[in-house]
Image (cartoon, rainbow, N blue to C red; front, side):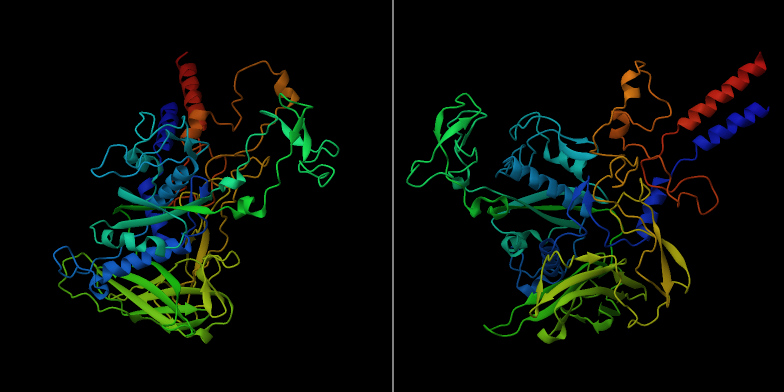
Length: 571
């Protein structure tokens, strides 16, 4: 009987699986509206870049009140207000991958009219190696059977709560949102709930920077015969034709003409850049935030020499209707935002209202430096929202204007701006704490990464996450830990083979090793340490840690042990 109880207990433990739906709800409940975005190990930094964010805001201003901008439908009738699009980080990162792929490999699979099956295909079979999306097959043409079709690419690369249903792209010579705004205006009024712009770029070497193959043949270089240096160091009257000597190659030791040195325009950092914009439309299946994003922007004066206006814009959408108030908090000072366009009528057919709020400042209101800011809104039902919910947005001010994408002033910081100017709220009870995490989606609970705690101050959640451990940019070799929290230990590190390994002719695997097989890696790798927050708050046994889960080798061992006991009893 007791052995039956042992085996029953083992099976009960086996049934105690993580409820992924509950974990997803927990993540949403944390309100991580400003979490960093990194896709498959290579990403865009803490937030979408400035031009991507401003473009999203402009498009939503058109949707919220197209009539204000004189936009009409095909029959010349005003377009009714539409709810703002939701930005999806996963969809944008899928577009960013495709943009880089298209630029690096000249993979131009344009949409045709009428459409063709190969439109927007990728020029290879997309797979995952060590968790990183990349080509796992040869480069092919758009219509090849080995090319990844557009919809397959969406399924493989897109992550999160969005579903890509259509996309378009544009290649430009600059990465400003203004270069693509006009082409998107007529595509801004569809019934999709998600719009995610993404831009990537590479430097293209000019033709004069591509030197012809060395006259010394493959593998050879034409060097100065005396100094063996590249370039004609013994030129002038003594050597007007820059005659050198081949080092290596099929003509080694023979005379050759040393190529002229390249100018500064041929340094990689000075290459002219080509920008690839992707625009993903689709369905957003997650919780639609009341504030999806807020931006800062410089509005130039009407006349040459007029001072610029520093403006903050935010789109707001809520089922209940208009916000009671919207406030910008910058460096401890509160400023009320005014409704820029008239609120939509209450009888509108759409599921929730969409509005645009704005506040302006004169040139002297901000000193030069990095300005932290957050938005705070009180909904029609009295609920309090903040954007971002963790940390602060930042704006670099220089000579009275905003400087976008300044490396010294990242667009998001984990440091919370002083919000003491806001009135006390009833979001929470003073002294309460809750789990928080500002790392990239999917990294919490993996490797070294773990959640922190957020405190309730004056009835508001503080916006600061204390004690969290965030992903490193790359793994630290030799520490046997997953530092970048993507499910792989010592990723990209050299494999060290010891003398003991060399002398071991037994090919049986070490059952105590934490090394994973390629099949396990494709499933997300193996975690050797559980995060501190894996205990069920209700007192149960189920973990709330994100995948990948530890391999249940202990379960197999216990089952075998139970069978041994059972056989011994029978004998």
